[in-house]
Each structure stands twice: as structure tokens, then as C-alpha cells.
Image (cartoon, rainbow, N blue to C red; front, side, top):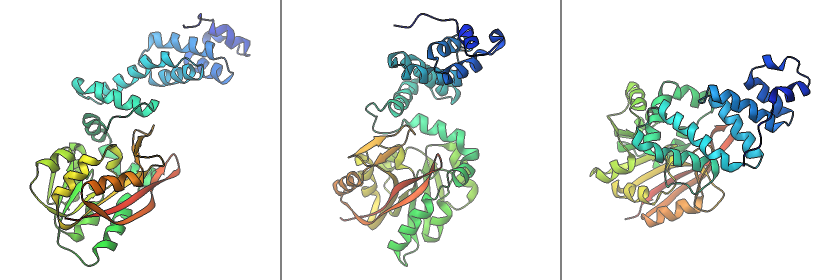
Length: 321
């Protein structure tokens, strides 16, 4: 049951603010919340949201207040409204929005996650990020997953060159220049056409195509001597099907090299960052079921998140049949 509305301006004056009628409701809400006046802060926010219902910052603050006040059930429609607005802004097709919203809610609430990120969300998200993606990753996030993976691949390949290489979820092609010296032919697949445009500008791929990597692998008849997935499996929870399709596309003696973020609980888990983490035992189980076996397993720092290092697994598998 919602509490009886209170006069937030009176409460603001009681906190020592004269002329409270002139204070914007959003500013007042922050002040009142900092003074541990949650009901008054809520009243100010709701007054503001009556006039500007799509103000994301105010919605997020109201959600925080309700959660900390033990009123989680009232958060659900607010969170869904936020996610619906995000879908609209990202131009996600209406038919796909329920799936996207369910995914985002699972990431935020810790409820049972779907087996993978919604394709429509992946494509829309990275189309938006494509223009600034490389600068953001390399600078702010100190992203080094391609280098970490290629160090592992290089140590396994030794002197092998002239390989047929497939870059799954190639994005803007950050791994392309690192893969090119090993490749007779270098292909890339990604859901985002915006990212593929950036990859094409690098001029290192022989072929780039848009598609969902599991479906593309299933439909292909080509074999590859090296398949890589750099920072891609973080958008998949369940990996059994993907590993099976990778195994079918590997040439005898071929390698599958990938990075994931390290999970400490069995199986996989969806984090509030909307990225999955995987336990090493789960990766080994998926590999074994697909007749893939490990050649190399390392832990390494792949990037930063909120200034803190993100530890991942760097894994190289080979086909054993």
C-alpha cells in the first residue's frame, strides 16, 4: 500500500531550506533523500514525474528509494517503463521488446536468466555504440582481450600460418589485425551492421557478414582451422549448442579460442552489467560434450569495470575427432 502523500516543500523547509516553493522538485528529492526523508523525496519525484514521466534519472532515483523502503513490488512497473523507453530509443522492433525487457530485468533483479542476450538488443546496442566503441574500450575500459587471446593462440600455433580463420562476433574488427598474420583467409561475423562497417574500414578481412553466430555456424559447410570468439561469449549463458556447432566447423586439428569473464558459481550467471560469467568447470563440460578438449587455459585481466580489473578465462580448445 502506498503511503499517504506528504508536503515535500514543508519537509524541505524543516531541513533548513527557505523558499522551498522555488526549489525544483528533482533537486529537492536529492536533498530530501540525502537527509533520510524518503517519503518526502518520493513525493517530490512523483510530482515531477507527473509532468515528465520519461525522465530516466528521476525514475531511477524513485526506484532506489522504493527498493530501500521495502516496496519492491512498486518498482516493477517503473523498471519496465524505463526498459520500454530504452527499447524505443534504440529502435528495437516492437515484436522483440518483451524478450529484451525480460533479459534486462533478469540482469537487474537476479531472477532466472535467459540462456543468452536477445539478438535484437545485441544488434541495436552495438549499432549505437559502433562510432565510439574502440575509443571507449581501449581508453576507459582498458580492453585487452584480443591481445590476451592472441598471446594464447600464438603459443599453441607455434609456426603454423596460412590458416582459414573465423572471427565470431568480430565487432569493429579489433582482433582482425592480430589474426591477419596467421590467416590465409579471414572471415568475420557480427549481428551489428554498424560494427561491421567499422571492421570493413580496417581492410584486413576477406569476408564480413551480418548474422547470429550460432545460426551462421549451423548453416555453414565451410571448415576452419582457427575459430576465435573474443569477448563474445559474455552475451551467451548456455554454451552447449554453440560449442557443438563450432566443433562441426573445425577442421581436424583446428583450434577454438575464446575469452569469458570468470564466474565463481557453478554453471553461468547473468550479472547486473547484463553480461554473463562462466565457471571453468562449466566450460570444460561444454567442451567435452562437443568432443573438444583443452590445449590451454589461463586466467588474465581482460578489461576494467568501474576502474576495477575484470578477470577472465582465456581458453584454447582443439577438436578431438
